[in-house]
Structure formats: structure tokens, C-alpha cells
Image (cartoon, rainbow, N blue to C red; front, side, top):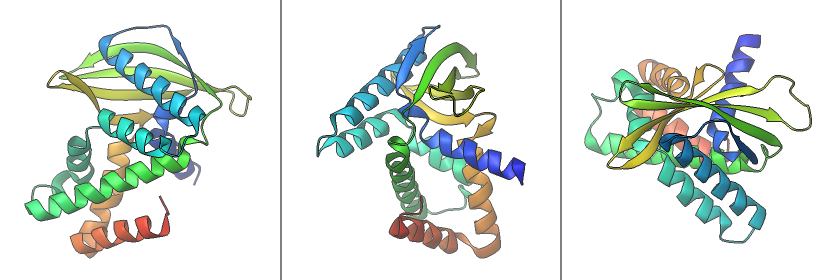
Length: 201
């Protein structure tokens, strides 16, 4: 049970990992600079609290995340058998779920300091390691968050976020493929729609 709670906690943090309020930098690199600049811009928008801030936040988040890679990775072996229409439908729903989950949690994780620890190459990706710690002391140990970025046409895009060893993509894949294998792809689509309708993201 503790392991499951940790995974859920880590997965939730992964979705909102770009929302940390204060940013400190012990390391600088191209991919790191992208993550840092997006975080700074996002926090600035939150502080503004203007009516159109939500749209701007969503647009900024969309600029950073590679939804195509996230969608394919989240379905794993179940991606290839899908038709183009199914892939498009799944990708659109996943994008909405990630957005809404992000928007819902954006204002919750504000009291954190984040430090950049390293930027390391991993195949064709760059892994930007950060450590975040609550200012109010609610959590003594820092949370380690690693962003996996890939340069796509001269733009760094996030393809995965790993929080305390738990990959966002792997977490999704475990849930989604289980549903598809048990109940079929239409059932997964319906569950995603239900979550969006209920706001349970």
C-alpha cells in the first residue's frame, strides 16, 4: 500500500512538476535553460491571476510537452494496432487530461524551491535533474524530478517526467494497457471521457 501511495504521489507531482515557484540554478545547459524559463514564465502567469492566464498557461505547457511522444509511449505495444482515427482520438483525450490535471494542481504546488542538479545525455535525449523542497518544511527530503527532453527541429520538448524514480509515461502505460487488454480500446476511450466529464483528473 505504501508503495502504491508513493507511486500515486510521484505521478501527481510529475504532472505538476513545472509549477515550482522558486528556481535556483546550480547547473546550466540548453535543455536546463528551457525548463527553467518555462517554469519562470508559468509562475509569473499564476501570480498575475488574470482572466486569460489559464489559456496562456495551457499554451505554454503545450509548447513544452511532446504530446505525440507522450501518447505513443503511454500506449506502448497497444499504439501500433490502433487506426489513425483511434490514435488521434486517444492523443486528444490524453492532451486534455494532462492539461486539466496540470491546471488543477498548478496552484497547489507553489511553496517549493527547486535547484538544478545536472544535465546528462541519454541516447538522443537530455536528462535534466532537479531537486525540489517545500519551503514550509512539510516534506524534509527534497523531491527528485528528472525531465527527459529531446531536441525536435531545434526546440527542446519534454517527453517524460520522472519523479522519485516513477516515470509519468510508464505510469500511464501501466494503467492504459491494462484497461485495453481487459476491456478493449473503446473502454479506455470511454474511461478517459468520463474522467474529463467528471473533472476527476
